[in-house]
Image 1: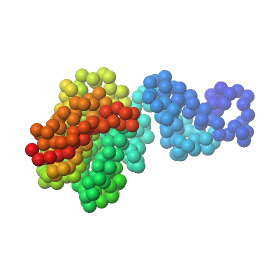
Image 2: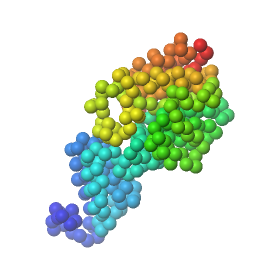
Image 3: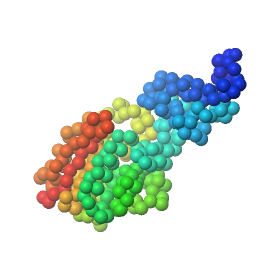
Image 4: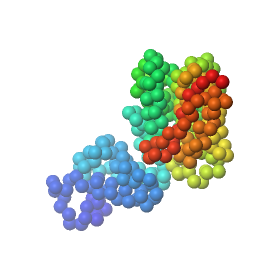
Length: 299
């Protein structure tokens, strides 16, 4: 293989070979990323190629050899070092949204999409004309923006404590009807007490002792404030239980994401004696316990 073209020595360079170089380099990049332990090497190699070449993954075959951009290998090297794909491209896809993300904000994960899907169905089932929704620990604004987009008449408020994360949320929420608030999710929005139809959160939930087991993409790049929460990982959720009870109307619902290893633990935080009913866990698309829900009742 020659250094200048990436073609096997002696291969034809005419019309039939003009579109093979990028796909060959993607194959090489896939192997490098796999060797580095990247969980989705083929997808990431293709996504980086599409980003660098200003096209879509499904059209990589249409990039002529002459247009191959060597900066692709710079991007691959960054991903090989376990820098998040989304930090390299500056974008994250979440349900029907394309969000701006980067250093200082938690990158939204695909598993959270099932949490939002359940919440959307729950709000629609309430048959409320203009439901009030509150997203606590909003990060990039992914959950709040998805709910505002898919529940068109909803009124959506989102709270974030970290100022750097809030800056990213502001960029993403520009032009939307999501109202952003800087503050502690546990004490925020007292003016909305007893009014919310739905409170939703993807809070920090990793136990402090599991730091070394966290994937490098999260451990080394996501804000610690968005990841860790006490010895058992449930400190923030315990605080959010009281916040949700305060904010919700009678009959309103709370939806809280948690780790798949915490299945069965979170519903026990939302007990009857604390003013909750129907507390239950729900699986994600991989059938792992991913989020808990409960309905607010009078104590």
